[in-house]
Image (cartoon, rainbow, N blue to C red; front, side, top):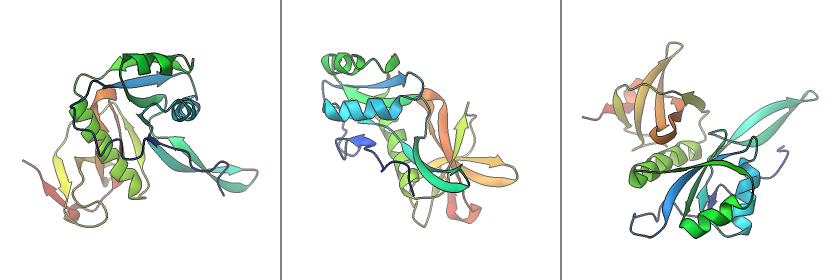
Length: 184
């Protein structure tokens, strides 16, 4: 049983799917004050400001009972989409510590789409930081078919790493080698 119901992680719904880069808005990575990601997201929904906050389920043991929580995949980060006026309205929440402009928004959105697909697969994820490069692959079959990433080795197990290069973080999922094809 979750402590709280799942919250909005993408506002408006389909934000990442509809992005084409032809707008006056731009993407920003908002680095939040400690443990303020979901509070900021709630305020942005109230203000009707577009954002994406990747959330994953996490099992916690509280008083001997397993409780599911919905936690940010990338601690401290929320991806905001707006113009300068909207950015200032978001900053007025006093939950943002730093704002970083995104230089390559098309690449960021593509990375976020891949992360979103990985989360939606329901597979257990591992947070990866300070990424190193490896062989780029694509999944050939199954629920994550078409998903692209990098193969990494962790504790003798092959994992597919999907990264947000902009913040040097990502998530990985265990994957069988026979499901992968190399990308040239």
